[in-house]
Length: 513
Image (cartoon, rainbow, N blue to C red; front, top):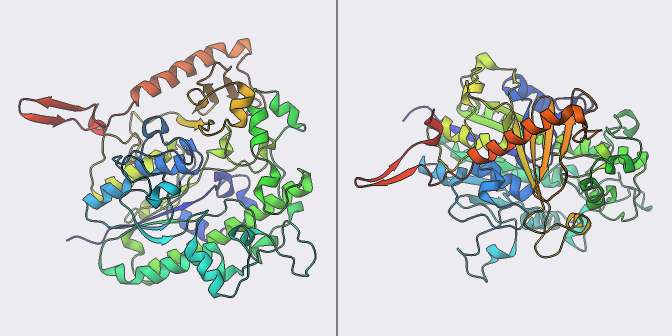
């Protein structure tokens, strides 16, 4: 047996890239992530291929575009036989340990209708061993911990209410009812660190998933007021929200879907003043710094136990967060901030590339193939992503992509969404695709709606230039490029098998010229 090959795959929730590297990063204290970046390779143009949480993690862990796995919404089942990182790592002898959640809605064909797996969209993905349940809407172990520590709360939702230290009416940036040592982030890290010491003697794979900085935006002291709202940048936006809405019919419903008040618990009448906006942005920054502290604890554990040099470390996020940009919150939109996420990979034995930055466009679906490639496991043809190992070595394959591709389904079968009501669409045409080049971003809709085209060498996302005559050639070129992308990436699960007189023959997709 060779030297140990461990994999630590850390995913944060709703962390936008420019908070780690970019314009906002200089305003956030991130000593541990920055130290890791100095010892790793950072991918600056890394994008989620789909939003929101459930679909994004389905793509992240299966290596498939949403158009192929079709788990397109939180609560939409993922086919039970879809290859994923856990099923494939098992083929290499790993027990895929899950500390946290994958937000996977199970296939009702594979479970009895009374099975609890069909009562939550937050079930764990097939193949994983759920070591610690830490699901956003469940989190029973953490709740039990809070009760054991003497915290008093009427309901789970009240855990997310800020509490005034003076007994007055709470403010949105008052601290959480729990101390920092008992937060969800601290608890999950504690459980991880308590579990892993005995695994030193074997190769291991751990998927560690932090809920933060996902809303509700409430933080324990000192993170609740760590950053001065007056000292951080204002959102990137037009002065009047109506001017944003005027860019395309999609945006009226987008702004109505997720308001500023929806980011906190207990303040239903909170208005979108600059003061409130900046206060919530400061809370978001504080939660990122809290996550950074605990990622640092995990890295320290690897170093102290002599496992750092044997462990592939991947740190990323499932998707981004608008954070008030374009007068929008959350991730239910088309803008870069909702899809652009950090990706940091430290590969053992790659010290010569420490601190390097990759500027080629990469996607969340590339991470699972990269991990499989590193441990020597074949990449299934179902996976649309490609291994990043060449880019980690500083080599750019001649046929590497020049753009990224993302999708968003804005329907809901049980009750029409605000988009369906406003746009007159249904479940089959309430979707969009986004293609991003260095200069242009194209958004196309399944419904008969006009496209969106942004020119980042001009006004960027402030102005939709799709109808301007001088951009028609670019619009046509990008539309054809998007069509070809979809055609080339149709599901390859079985398409490269041939049934012959000698039995089935298989051509490996990623070895094709």
